Amino acid sequence: MPDTRLAIALGVVGFLCGLLYAFTTPLWQAPDEPSHFGYIEYIDSGRGLPSPLEAKVPVAAQAKARAVMKWPRVSEPLPDSPRVLPAEEFAYRDLMYTANHPPLYYLAARPFAKVGAVVGETRLSGLAYGARVFSAILIGLTVSLAFFSARLVRLSRANALLVASLVLLQPQYLFIGSSINNDGLTIFLWSAFVYLMLLEIRQPSYGRQLLIGATLGLGLLTKITFFLALPLTVAGFLLAHPGDRNQALRRAGAAVLLAFFISGWWFIGNIFRYGSPWYIIGGTGLGPATFAEFFTASKFYHWLFKSYWGYFGWMEKQLPRSLYAVMLVMSVFAALGAALSAIKTKDAVFRRSLGFLALSALTLFAGAIWFRIVAQTGQGRYLFPSIIPFTILLWIGLRSLTPDRLKSWLAHGTLLLFAGLSAAGLALIRQL
Image (cartoon, rainbow, N blue to C red):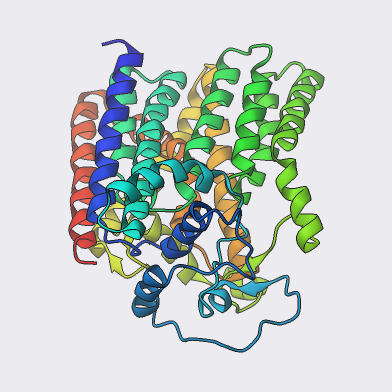
């Protein structure tokens, strides 16, 4: 089967798996879903884009979250023109604490939500499940990109199929990706950005910086996480043009300028409305962590790792401890193997491709650390924009440390392990 047809088939399977998670997970049981949903419902009501200090989450959605999280009710007036408040301060007042997010995901999900509202049992539940169908479509597109990206790193068709299958069987990604939030679109657009940069590294093409810039611009209109992709763009073009630094910087500059041309209206508008490019809502309200607190916060790394592989509901349902231990050992060996592959290979394009994948993964990890420092919170889903780089590096690393005669057993065993992860995740989700 040609690559394109196989990628389409993978996308269809990814969409169906996304639907399975979307209709298995009870409404409002994914982190922050009530507030993300409120954004879509606000737009659908014809009131324009929401304001963080005015828009409220629909009572039916907020009540469920309040019951689960035991949120108190706060009626005291907000401080005058606050710039930074913890998300809980907004949630306790039923205010939409995601209203500071860029609008692209919510605008794109609205047509699907409107269809759901027509066919659903109630308007709110129909809007919600319609938006989740859009999220399932994004999962299918991301799984297809996983296959194409693995092929660009010169993995065989069978190995690229395995990489896409591992992405498809990652339970926390399916849980987060199928819910109502802007993570799904951020993950897809970051994956498209990674694919385009890998294509540029493998076969530079005049004008590709325009596609990369357009992807960056759309990403910036989805989540401010995409600001992390801007320095990565410069690094990617330097890797793609190692012998011509000036050309690399010119092309990176053109991509970044186009990105701001597409997205700048949003951030300029925020400056006029709030005095800042983005209205900042903090994390836990604990304030910035000191460096001593940060470096001794082993619980943060433990939390980040567990919530990357599987921590369901509002971070309440964990996978069995033995599975986390297996994934930790696997991840450590894979990191070692990927590094050795990059050192040993004589293929310069392969080495630069691995370097870019590693930079993508490390950039998201650095972003999660930064968020930990400034807001004392963090979840594994903050790493999901790089789920394709993580998974490609995982498989390349494991293969490089495995003798040829055992590689087939490794492939089957890894697939079975991830299938077990997914089955365990679904079982826990059904208990929410």
